[in-house]
Structure formats: structure tokens, C-alpha cells
Length: 474
Image 1 (cartoon, one colour):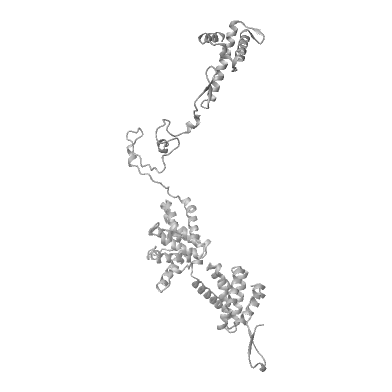
Image 2 (tube, one colour):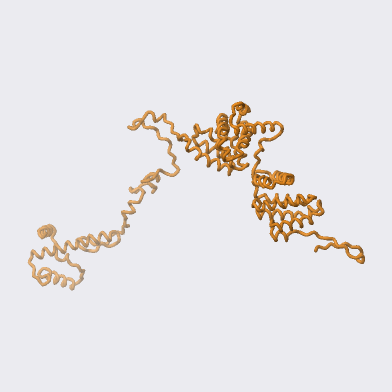
């Protein structure tokens, strides 16, 4: 290393004044520098040095000054004063500092040209799909592509749905039919079935829907008949309908185990299907002389009877009725009155309970209570009074009519008693007796009993009052 330093000093002679670290002025400066240089040339740390050792020390000081100069110039570049190669202060021009990181993230042109817009209009860069709003058209097939195939131009791509297997049919279609019983939208069922590749299982849809309806309510059977009529032609064919009903007639012995009235219900479905023209009129005649099962014979006889009755004016479209809110209020009131009259004639409270439950209007049972009490007020004998009291007790005990519906029915009678009294002069008296009896047997509570209105009574005063009639309620 000493040899390298000596070679560098020979090529670049350095005077002793250049190695001064302090800047002195005047005579003191000159004297101090001479004394300092002498000491450097002759002694360092109390050791006398030769001329060769002195040169090595000067080279080390020069290298140290060079390193300090480079460090200061890189740190203070562009910020005012800087040091020259020999350590003198130099006044430089102000230059704005530059950041390599900012240059790396800058997307503007680095040549200083252009309008300062991003490169490629913002469509370039990593992870960029293109400028906003740009729509790509279909790419032309490159014939020179090594993977090019002539058959690609004639390919048609479409979604292929595998055919529905028999083991998955019931598990897939049953939820669709059960949801239909809730919303009643046949179009939604048709769309869901169209998405399935039914294949050979297409004719199983009507038989599955009917078998589910046999265990459901009358309103669900009406919905099933409408569903079959709407699906025929769009999703199912006439032959699918005939094959499905053939299967139902063959499975009647098994259906009777779960639903004892299955033969009559299937017969009604067949009659309704013939009326809706989804089964041919000759469908029933095709079984004449070929039926060995008694359940199948009962179903076909039921369908034949209903079709004959339809010729006399019976509307098969209304054989199932309409459940709940789908039925007009006037029709519900009419059916409740018929139910009460039939009960007064037969006295079968179980049948009355079944008919009221089949109406499927638990929110409208207060109308039944109202009509029953009005019938008692308009009757002339004790028979209707006792039978209606017994029926309301039975319905209250079985919770078919809830406490809230019973309270609303009695309250409606209390509100209309003034108008009822116009046609029935003894209405107040009969109502008081009926309310007391109802409270005694536990149909109503004390609050409903106390709300029963009392009729204002006439009281004649003495002749001294001039025969004036005074009205007083007590």
C-alpha cells in the first residue's frame, strides 16, 4: 500500500498548505501554518519521522480529505455551497433534488416531451386490461397459429345438462312442487322444470304432483289441477299426461294405505283433467272391461259420475274450491251459513269441525262466530240456542277457533245489536242469556261477558207528570 501511495504522490505533487484543516488569515495564519507544517514534517506523536514516512502520512491525509469531499458533495448537491477537490468552499447553483423512487413510479414521459399525459392513454402497465370504456370485439382466428385447427371455425359452444336420473328425480322435483303450494306461481315451476333435462322422466311429473296433493289440503289440490293444465303443451305433452295418470291408477293400492280416500280424489283429478282438455274424452272409455282392481274401478266410476253431472250444470272447475285469501269474502260468508244450517239439521259437530277446517281461513273464524250468534238471535226455539252453544264449546275446546277470534266474534255482535234489534225485538234479552250461558260453560271470559250491552228500558211515571214517558237506562 505504501508503494501505491508513493506512486500517486509522484504523479500528483501536493503542497503542505493544502492539507490544512483550518482557514487562517493574516500573519497569525502564516505563522501558525509554518509552525504546524514543521511539526508535521519532523514529529508526529513525539516520534521523529524520516522523509519517506512523512510522504506516507501526507498521502493518508489526502485520501481522507478526498473521502470527506465526496461525502459532502453527494449530500449537499444542489443545496448551495459545496467543497472543491482541494477543500475550498464553492458557491453552486440551486438544483432540485431528484428521487429515484419517484422516477420509478412516474408514468409520464421522461424525455420531457408530450402534454404530460400517462403512457398509452392509461391503458398500459402491469395488470391493466385497457382504457375505461373500451370494448373488445371478437378476435379473428390466426391461420398461421401453430395450434390452429380447421374445425374451430365450425364449433358451437353450449351448456349441456345431463339427463335427470330416476334416483334423483323425486329428490329434485318434490321441493319444486312443495314451494309451488306456497307461492302458487305456475310460471316459476315451468321455468324450473325447463332448466332440468327430464328426458324419460318427463311423464313422472304429474303423478308426483298428484301424489303430493293427495296428502295435502283441498286448496293444494286445486293448485295442482291448475299446474297440470298450465304445464300441458309448454313442458308436458298429452301423451305424458296419459302415461302419468295410467301410473296413478296402477299405484292406487299403495296410495290407499296413506290416503284412504285416494280412489275418489284421483277420480276427481281425472274428471278435472278431462274438463281442462289435458286428457282426451275417450281416456275413461279405454279402460272399460280391462280393470281388475277395485280401487281403479272406483276412481274411474267417480270420474264418470262427475263428468255426467257437469253436463247437467255442475262446474268441475270449482270441485276443489279455493282456499284462504283466494276466495271472495261473500262466498266465505255464504259457505259458513250453509255449514251452520247443515249442522242444525244433522247435529254432527265433527262434520262441522271438519268443514270449517277445510275452509282454511283461521283468520276469518270470527265471522263464523258472528253468524252463529245471529242465527241464535233470529231463531224462535230452544233447539238452535243449545246446538250453537254446544258447537262453539266444541270448537273452543279443540282450539279450532282461538280465544282472539271468539272475542272478535262476540264483539261484532255487541256492535251490531242495535241494528239487529230492529228486526228482532227480543235480541237484547236473548243475547244476555246466550252470553251468560257462554260464560258459565267456559267459552268466554268475564271481560267479554261484562262488555255485553244492556237495552234501555221505558218507565212510566205517575199521572201527575202529565203522562210523559221518560227514558232511563239502569
